[in-house]
Length: 639
Image (cartoon, rainbow, N blue to C red; front, side, top):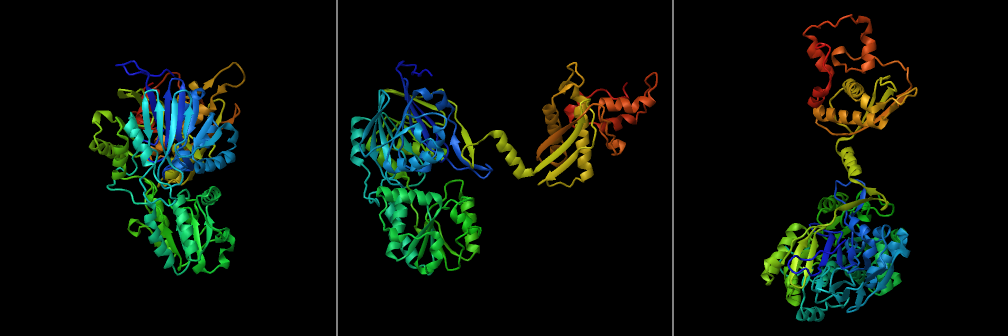
């Protein structure tokens, strides 16, 4: 694809294209390109909303990357959260990435994901340390600047390009008492500010919140208090990737003489990797397999698990539904939610809390308990970042629309002119030159929905069918039709999950009408005489026409839209036509041939006018859809 230039200067522009993370939380994916070089920054996933039935994860649409895969020079990873690295293994199945640079913990987690997905040979992983500089392609130099976040080993980026320096903050907050003792490299960020920053792309997640985000250490005394006062078992759920939080919980378990059992695959994986790399330090004797937990007194037990977001398959959710094979809730249990719901997960989290309370447990949750702090900077953190870097242009990213707008106002309060700020959508192209910022022509962006296998794509049609199944149920119908266009048996109708007051007889009558209407009005377009013994019939087309007709009928008569599945059973030529047992006034025409055969004994040499009262009866035989009435042939009364 040719690189656009700004009209005023004709100077080649740096193009920055977010494919995810705008007007949403999650699936953060951004593209930097200049000339023939294309560099990726992060590639995350998001979790499905309630209406995405059977969907496991949500990915950004990567059509643009597939079309330009020969230009991909490498990827930069800022940190190891799923909304920043969760999509990489999936993308590697569709295009190669020559090399991926990132921090040790993030790449260690990614290595396991790639091996599981069978794509370990599709790229090279290269770990970096603070202030390391890597070159990607001919036009990008990237320096990794240590920041502080809710996961260890997190970085902001200073990207040197032919048009100037771009700062990409990644997820950050200014934590002056970090759990791991790794401080935000404020000095290096300020040096870039002194040298001059062309543009900054900055995390907007907490842009609505005033003040500074508290240090991760702020939760330690409150967790300590709750664990020390627990009379029985302590069950704690938090994000598995919140390594600092997990490290503090394990420290407190050791302090209070409690053995720890881990539940949840991601919790096991992250803790194993973090211990291997030295981010978590604790003795092996602290841990006990979950199968042995019943042999330890409740007062000496702590269960650390996934499920803080109410995920249906996570450990705590299964426990709340009494479906976990090893753990059942006791009335003496204290269950601590050391996390806040991600937008969209609130209902599932509240439902999980309710179920646990109904089982008799004491549940500790909510902001008032002081057991969770965010890893994202609030307004004062964001102001400090802008003050350090003093960018000429500013683009808020990683947040919903109101967050982006609020972050924009914060930047203006710090002296960035309104005309130098862009609010963009996924797929929008930010074009930067040394003197300007503008919005270029957008590229294709959207979402890809993956099923539980993380291999199958759930397209829009499949998702709509699942929503219909969940909302209004399904109707299946078997129609037997001969190759001559005759209905040779009554349609068989089966309802599952459909709420209706209609009697089975009426449903059968409606099905007959729709089949009859299609045979009467569409058969000539769907059956083609090829000169052989039998016509060539588009049975799929017949099936689709019947489904559409019955769908309209259900919407009109019952105000429901169930999923309609019609199966057509072809019958050989010469099979006798079915004669409906429904009363004449309710019966639809079976087919043109059947009508001719039925009327032949009464036929007269000359057409005679029928009584006027016959016209309404004939009209009743046709489906009630107005468009169909306009299309149908004149009735016998007119002939």
